[in-house]
Amino acid sequence: MPVSNYYKLPAIKGLEALDAINYNTSFPAHFHPTYNISLVYEGVFEAKLNGKNVSATKGTILVTNPGEIHANPSTGAGGRTFFTFYLAPDFFAYGDQLKDLRFKENVISDNVLFEELHQVALKIKSGDMDNAGEEILTRLLRGMALKHGSVNDGSETWKINALFENYLDESYFEKFSLQEAANQLGLDKFKFLRLFKFQTGLTPNNYLILKKIEKSKIMLSEGADLLSVAIYLGFYDTAHFCKHFKKFTGTSPVAYKLSV
Image 1 (tube, helix red, strand yellow):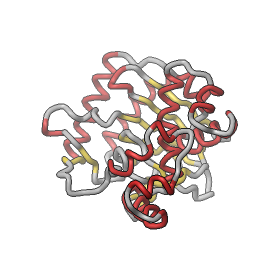
Image 2 (image 1 turned 120 degrees about the vertical axis):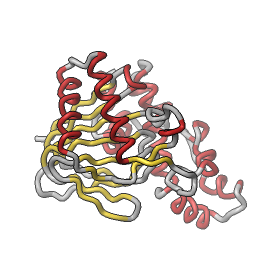
Image 3 (image 1 turned 90 degrees about the vertical axis):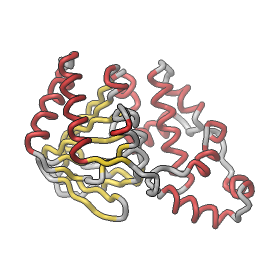
Image 4 (image 1 turned 180 degrees about the horizontal axis):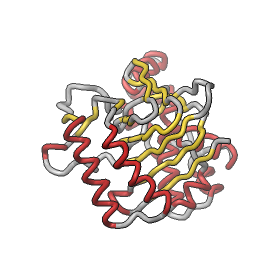
């Protein structure tokens, strides 16, 4: 039976984590504003990244960058057990050496690093994460960045295009007009759709849902109840909100709220 637990720690720039056991649900195309670093314990963690398929097997580390569109299909052959660290995009921004860092290796095979990160994951799951554990995790991740990452030179288009993002801010949480957005850019709506998908990898509707989910995390962290969040963000009801929240995060909004 699939089991998942979500952890939200105040230290290390708002570190969050997901512990998933026998998880066999597919994640649709989506992105995170964070670095996702997943330790794969059992099964094969499939991912579609940058137009290619990658497979993270037992004992490897699967990495995605902030804003990087990816999907995680389920193979149906048993569940996946993994532990994911979610790190704020400015976590590595300590000096110019690691500013705008991007991992180009999506699957990292490093037995020593895996075991050391596993020990930190155990501390988080047991509630024993202390200052020493935070220092160890920070050291491990910075070392991983220096070895496997590189500084983005601005020539790549892996970040969401700001021009399109402006049309999907909070003012569109209740209602988004595709025709109005296209008109403001002087395009017909079909060309707008094609350009948007090309720039972001998502349809405007799915991109908007992801933005809503990120906003809901902030509201839940501030103490808002599920009904208030659902109404404010334009979902039909709490069930509709909960369905989309779990679809894109792997946990329920109730579990997320309790983790704060």
